[in-house]
Length: 437
Image 1: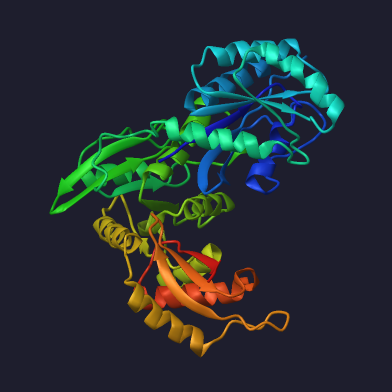
Image 2: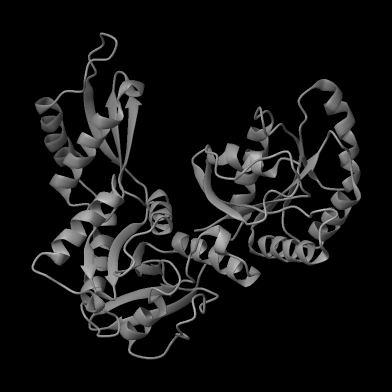
């Protein structure tokens, strides 16, 4: 289930630097000029085996046009409402400012767990000066340095422990029923697909991109098939998210992915796959969701003998490295192959929950390892002795060997391909772990 943490605070206290550190990539633009983050950034961070959604919000911008300040304030409020926990960041080098106090006032009224992170504490003098922040009255206070990373471990431990207390969006839907989220960019036909599947106007459908503001759950129980369909708002690139309502929908769509077992990933056949589509796809892969790719509006494409085959080949190249996914060409308006997509989604759901007996796993995989040994590293022969499946939501396998850190990506890929070949994990990301025997 989804757990969301929002990083808030005034401009230039180091929120984006901290965000980048947690995501281990330079995703947010960082600059010494205040007010650089205007659009919200989203990502998935992981700490001590738990992962959570992370939102980097814009700061309140001093001396800005009032309109802009109001817009940012609205979006910060939305982030606070949607988050399960809040990291409130302040700057030890400047001390407490009026903006910090007004932000603290806002957060005290939110009834959410607030973790006060005093940033830029990178020497003993700063630590002494930073004690003034106790006067803001927050129970959980952490002295950190976003740039060096000192103190961030304790802060993340606190995030993890607040995760235990969280109800984690417990839904009243039976846990054993498959949940399918319909995801994709705005205006690719997600709501129309939902309506076509259930045969009634359950959601508002219009040609205006961004009509669906919230995630909508529909229980489907017909023709001996039972599942829950989650229609999400379209996810579009952050610089296009002008309206704060739309910012809200993006957070909800990302949370809907967390709730789902399988993502029905909708593309527009005419537009092909864009960079934003790939970003949505890789987010679903990172979250370990089963995926079925649906290419919609196929009835509008002019076709020759191998149009579908060539289209599929090019699409799979763009989706690499994880491209072992079922792909269906559909037309929602003509109701072409839409029920086939549900049958495939149910197959992928079974693949995601496939448990392979340890004896069979070792029988097959040790032969594959015998057939092609791991490369010798620094004169050491790597020996893999034993394989077992781990009890996780996403199919995960532990390989026990003498030098786990020396197994490189090409050999990892070889093992993953063998697992897919032998045990049918089509549409599901696989996780491989190498451990000391």
